[in-house]
Length: 283
Image 1: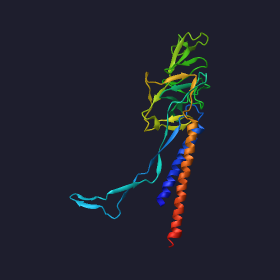
Image 2: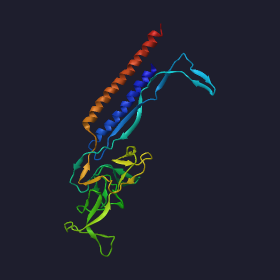
Image 3: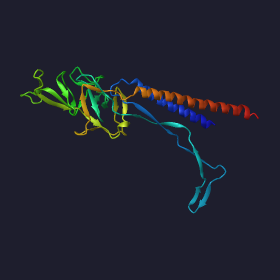
Image 4: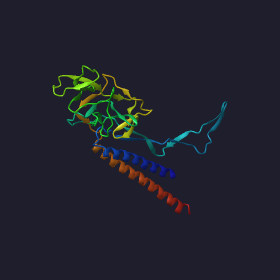
């Protein structure tokens, strides 16, 4: 009978984990590049029931063995198995801002932070004070050669992630870029290429907040995606979250009903145990 308490309580805990994940998804439904969390549960290790009146032990040349036959099995509830991130593609939202970049396909853009390199699908960028392309939190967006420094209305990003600027290199200094803002883009220079990476198991990336992810031992280290396998880069768009608010609300209703059902199990077990102690045991 006490097992029934544990079974009902474990079910309530499982539904609480689901509710937390759904609530977080709904809270971030309007965050660009947000990827929803999904709670996965599993049964506790199954308890094998054997005959109680048979010791089940027999001797053989190498010692003894348990011969008690399996007569059934009973579970003892559920537990959280995994809380993983679903990286399904989100829809594209046009912003008409040159600083906004979306990825259509599998991959992550790289960002430099004080805690090291992090990765994101949120391409809602801005121009920093020093001319670097940055996230809303001020973290520089990385190209394959380092942070990307541009000017407003003087750069474009093609579908392969290559960053082109309007200008030419100075004759006296081949490393110095001279802007040509009024020549109608007659002269363009390849500045850098967005550092777009992938992982062996991206579902095991760790969320860091602010739409950033961190590589873990399980996910593997980041690898720059080679040409031909890169996602399509779309400038002037951002990727919306992949949260379906209608689906999440339906799941929330399911969670509430499942929680109430497990709660009634605990209450029923408590009532039966109280009757057993107060009435049957007295007789």
